[in-house]
Length: 328
Ligand SMILES: NC(=O)c1ccc[n+]([C@@H]2O[C@H](COP(=O)([O-])OP(=O)(O)OC[C@H]3O[C@@H](n4cnc5c(N)ncnc54)[C@H](OP(=O)(O)O)[C@@H]3O)[C@@H](O)[C@H]2O)c1
Image (cartoon, rainbow, N blue to C red; front, side, top):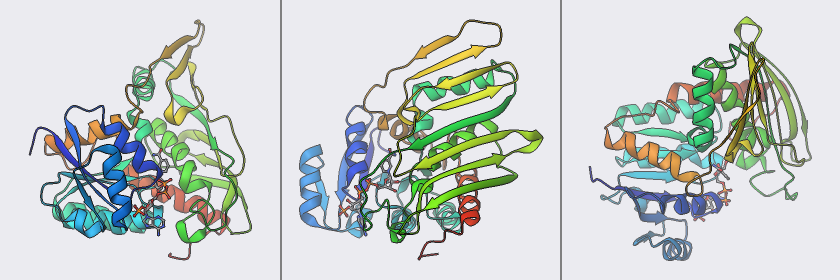
């Protein structure tokens, strides 16, 4: 294993640009190759980020013998196939959220990673941000006592385009898989267990996907998560964790956040501001790189069992709404 992790990127879209930008600030990582469905797009992306190898197919990228790891930045329904392609070619994989369309797909990918003994991680970048690491420290130290409730929302108003990945069921469209996953992941991080009960309501728009939704997850001992997501409505993008002895608020926009307030019962609030070094995507890449160098097959901060639990929760929420995608 080289000292510098040699990354490849599959799919030259929006988020892959951000990930490539994030890699720039890491001294122990380099972008060696990019793969696109078209050579022109790969060449343009490679030129922008200084990637020396540009492939006009995902297969060619996966088979580059010099890559240590591949970041999968394609739409949700392609995550499974693209991840498996790379794992079978002997590469470590960091795959965008949602990790797959559903739990069954996620299981398939994880099975392959275990067979091939390759590192695999869901790119839930928020977990690796310094402010969220701080929030986890506060929780671990018991600063707010036992967490009893969490409230989280992530909704934005996207321009309506029935063909786009946000609205088309063929792309696994809707708010839950695109942004609700951040809220479900937050609840999972705080309560460290899957929910026992789920109750939700969604407005399914003309294309049949969840344009806005609210869901309550019930955990053992009466703990509750009150979550919401949307792709046609802006929401505050905040997280509040309420405990027996205080409260933690992660300010807007929590998913790329830098600011949180800890209020311990009977004390003045403490503000924490932890700016991002780089654009924020560097933290997940650094964590994955560290694990890969250490020969780990998964990352403790975003372990695969938890990714599976989160996918399972997303399935159960969707089942309540009767939302099934064509590929399921
Ligand atoms: N972590 C985050 O902050 C964040 C933010 C946004 C999105 N995401 C996730 O990243 C994934 C991609 O989102 P995005 O906004 O980057 O999407 P995007 O801009 O549409 O890019 C997706 C790329 O995937 C490739 N692709 C492969 N098959 C495709 C198909 N059938 N149709 C369209 N594109 C296809 C294309 O690259 P080539 O043409 O080069 O092959 C395309 O540019 C989603 O799963 C999303 O949830 C994460």
